[in-house]
Amino acid sequence: MILAERVLRRERSGSSSPVVVRTSRGERFVKLRGAAQGITALIAELIVAELAETVRLAVPARELVDVAPAIESDDLNDELRDLLDASVGVNVGFAMLDGARDLKVTEYESVPLDAAAPILWLDTLVQNLDRSRANPNIMVRRGEYWLIDHGAALPFQHNWSSVREDSAQRPYDTGRHVFAWAAPVLATVHETLAPLMTRDRIRDAAHSVPDEFLAQVSDDVTRRRAMYATFLWKRLQWMHATLG
Ligand SMILES: Nc1ncnc2c1ncn2[C@@H]1O[C@H](COP(=O)(O)OP(=O)(O)OP(=O)(O)O)[C@@H](O)[C@H]1O
Ligand SMILES: [Mg+2]
Image 1: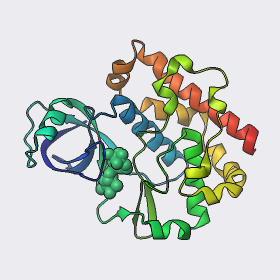
Image 2: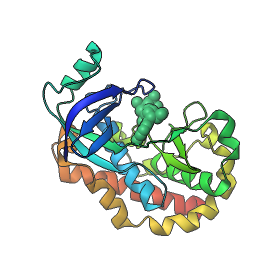
Image 3: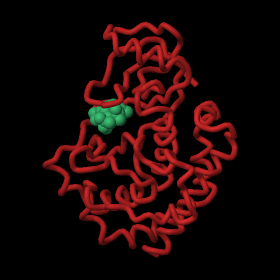
């Protein structure tokens, strides 16, 4: 964990008001625990980023960032102060993607199939509906695509009581996905990526979530962590059955 020294600015385009923070190890793009999206969004960010790396997709490196009470901020906005007060403690920091920019609408169709299809495959696994044409959550730098903003993935975590044996088999609506056109090659992509997504890697991804986050949403941290891994493993099995 690294200590946030000072808040430098808000990222105004983000609905969760992420902030750029100075730490002893440089600047970090920080998603705050006090944001309306809640701690579950931070849990999804950590797990999905690990799964993305498992299949060799680029995501900014994560580190937990400690925000102290009354942290100083260059941005004196009142709502930001409230948000920082609500975010004292452990937050999620990402490496700054310096020099990267958001993927533009005019570029969607020109992304090569071999870059687009693995992204569609990951989003199918984690049920990410936040890679739409309206909001693709992809940044580009020197021809490389970086995946950001996975807080809305893993929708099952919002309602564990309704999770049934077959919940992991829910079809993924690729229709709104920015790379919906890559769907015909998903089965081929699955052949390459599924072997990388081992049970251990899924467990490791669940272990990247600190106890402290899970304790906010469950009395039994160990069991809750295992529930994420089990659901994702079942979803991968469903992908085997439908794509394999
Ligand atoms: N690691 C990063 N380094 C630099 N800029 C980033 C980084 N992550 C995100 N950004 C920029 O900040 C914007 C908002 O980030 P992000 O989408 O993660 O936030 P959000 O609050 O979840 O947004 P929304 O819900 O509106 O999509 C991105 O569109 C991108 O331009
Ligand atoms: Mg976004």
